[in-house]
Length: 78
Image 1 (cartoon, rainbow, N blue to C red):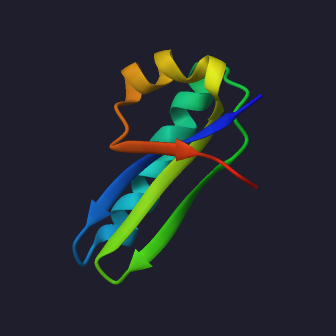
Image 2: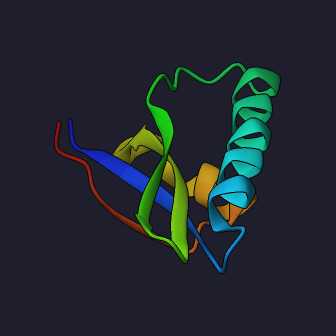
């Protein structure tokens, strides 16, 4: 079963704080919908670019993508 990483990008000097805040809302959505998603997080790519993400099974991706509107996605590899 392939897993996909749904990604929300944030840019600017406050990008890390914004990504961390967005992750709170992603976790609230996961809890609200009782989803079996355990891999989430924040990554800093540079001083001006951070991202929040969650990892979902490909078979469950479409409704989550449509509801949360990630900026991009990629195949997840551990």
